[in-house]
Image 1 (tube, rainbow, N blue to C red):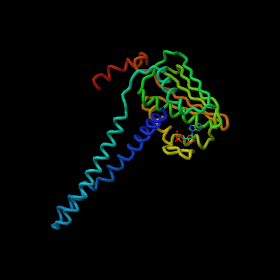
Image 2: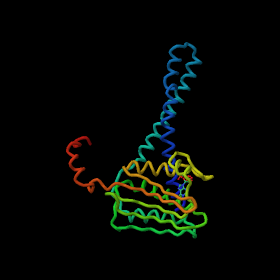
Image 3: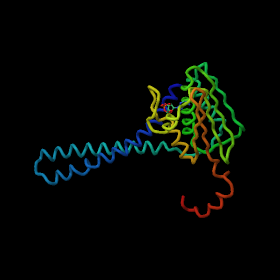
Image 4: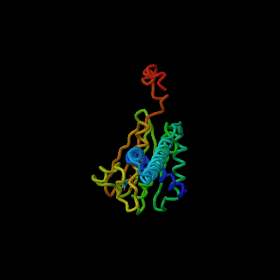
Length: 243
Ligand code: ADP
């Protein structure tokens, strides 16, 4: 479970990195795709032609790399599905098992065992895992981790509460900034990726924390479209055919 955890975390971090890298790489390589040809056109020197060819080939390979990184990122934007929250919580519990210190007590609560969500299973699992792992890491001396879900505001609210170190105002401000971390071996990408996932589903993340007492993350996600009510239905005919 530990390895699986590490793998899925790294995959998630990687896709964030890859998105940024591929974008920059494509821009940086642009001259390499054009300039060698110009040089070859304007020079009779066979040695220069040869060099231009080498440079152009590097540009082509780099561009190919950027493209395949981009498609990796796009491919990881996975399809939405109906998710049984009890399944999701169960999976998170299993994955946490390996990283749960003895002195941390885990409590999982579902207000209704039939609660469902609309989203991508792997992504939501990753998001909850990130929040729970942060919570565990904030409780080096032990404490209680609470994972709960309830219906709220026409959607579902997921709550992750810990009785750990908490955060000061300055940390709270920087939480969602990529690469912000207070840990010696942190990536600073966990909450960034959580937020990306939640934003992608039209949801919201809220944080409340008190230094020395603990932290509470609230993730609110909208209800599946067909339960969103009649208002959405009324607008539907206008959208027809836009696929
Ligand atoms: P990382 O865990 O790699 O540092 P994150 O984006 O997941 O990256 O978290 C960023 C920072 O937010 C952490 O380094 C930590 O300072 C703070 N943080 C996140 N969750 C908690 C929590 N439950 N309790 C205390 N601090 C937290």
